[in-house]
Image (cartoon, rainbow, N blue to C red; front, side, top):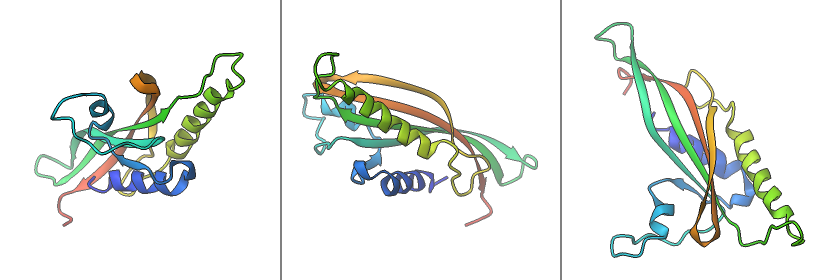
Length: 156
């Protein structure tokens, strides 16, 4: 479990060149970017970027009550954030920029869907996706996956 984030980060950073290895853990950077108070200090973000979060795992003990082996259904959230400074209305001459963003989302999904992490018993499987428009021309595409992991507490 402890390595799942690192595995996904490495995979995305190595395989998607246009990200320029701009892949990080999601700890609220996008939300903090637009707050204007003393507690919102964060480093500047460079777009496009991918943020990864593993917010929840639902565990089942295997082999009885005293077993140290568990199987878990892991939720993995992946956000692709891009700036949308191009005018994309139909007569703008740059309407294809919206399609370019859709192609990038598809490339990220194609990399993750069916990918098998180490220590897993199933590959990543997309469960939901959505997009969100933020202020200052930022569009966020969120892809949510699940996989099953095995955790053996007897292994140190």
